[in-house]
Image (cartoon, rainbow, N blue to C red; front, top):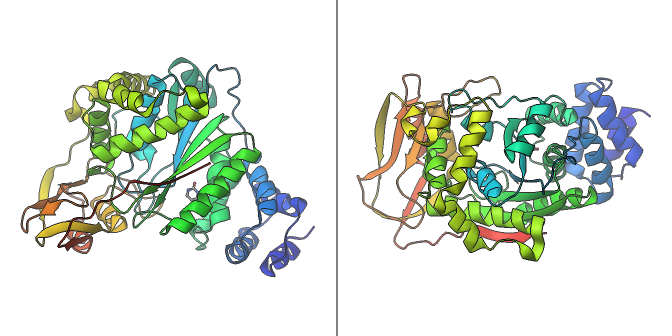
Length: 431
Ligand code: URA
């Protein structure tokens, strides 16, 4: 088999056989296929896409490029959630302990932020001492004893994806539904889970800018999971404004702990409850606890102890759950004032995410280091009334923050109008 023939076949729009697709992934993983051939192949896939018959062996080969963690010895239903990425999306930090509080097991392997989107690992690492690099053995032990573990991708999990994603990132081949779906699912299925709930984001701060593509991505991931005996459902949710009020790493941990205390903003509470309810339905079907009872569990503060226990197990300072001042603090705050009077009718969530990145809260390249203390607090949400000159955003700033670049982005990120809009968070449910 020759890679050049497979590339030409895909380029010309013909369907590849399972053995050809397996050959591409396996030879790339073994370093027998050079980056330039894989890059050409990825671009051919970008333009010609992949049929369902092609995607199945491709995703199989990606998953089997590494270890599939065996959690079969651990009792209980093992279920995770994956978000396709957004701004202010700290849901994992709330959802995992909430799911444990209702009796589910959550083995969660997360990623880092890149560009305008934040990453769960970076947020967790803003907790003093928190270690996201556990061995697979410790990960399993934690899931068994604590009910959850929050770690980063180990070298053993879907290594083909790690290399492929890095190559896609620099060859303009990220925004391709079969490649995104197989990338996400190969990592999630390697966790050894029974069920997975997908939160597919759509809007100004999401990879998917329209509902049709978000649905297609969701269905593609559901099909991959179902074939591999994992129960999968998906929610399509709005990302036309950041979630909650805080954007930045320690700031998002702060807001998550407040939510776990029963003091969270409505959108964060609603989405966390909705996603945990989906997880519960996968585990228990019609016997799942109701949405209302999951809401009550969250508001009771019962999940906070599970989060504190997780922090302690992973080497972090659990006292942050009682004393938020133990989280990294920025040197100073500055206020960005509303430039107009009216109702907030639109936000460019991507620009707001990039504004936080200018302060040091995110990365432009994988090598950048992030500042855990800096970020933004939004005082207004879509639909709120705003008076010109009142605080719209508070900036949490350190000496290396690029304040001018941040405010330049914020200037173009808000739209005001005469009448209030009523944003809808949950747009669709699939699976
Ligand atoms: N997240 C992933 O893990 N993979 C993609 O391809 C895109 C987003």
